[in-house]
Image 1 (cartoon, one colour):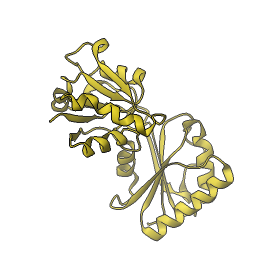
Image 2 (cartoon, one colour):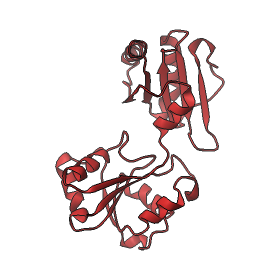
Image 3 (cartoon, one colour):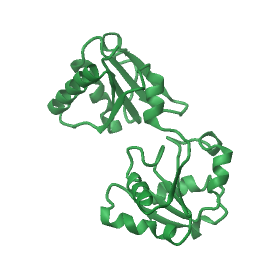
Image 4 (spheres, helix red, strand yellow):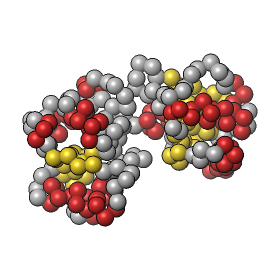
Length: 235
């Protein structure tokens, strides 16, 4: 039975040995078929895998937010022909807040083996470092861009965190990070813990986790840096 390998990729520019263990690397070097989020980005990752097949001879198909649901089934063709397939996102673990989940679901439905490989997940890494209780949390993706709606949503997340005793995680478009932080500091209660985890796994990694009342305002520039936000009013 053919296998769909979910292959993690680095969260930024990082040498290959730092983000994929040698034992896992050996399991995917035979692959010739890949489903990727963005072909250009994937080729950069594939160069570091030491594949047995030249890059120009690989079968690459894209699966991203623009791929219609009816087109996902066709991506199973190599598996149906008996070939193992690698699933690769632009960054992090495929299938986590990622369109690759659609392919994993279809593979299960068709009876194929789905094998996740360990790698960096910004959601997990941020939660690990935040000091929040990881037994219960929610991830919400992107919040509304409109200022008023965003502030209302932040209040709702804070209330949900308090009621459900669960940290609330979300992301933002990097160029709006500073505006998001301003909204958070203006909206949340002084004792609510705010975590901003930025450039995770990179040399420029910055993680700040403090109650709003003690948050170091204007001391760190998060502009245009990939970040994950955590609101925790359970403590």
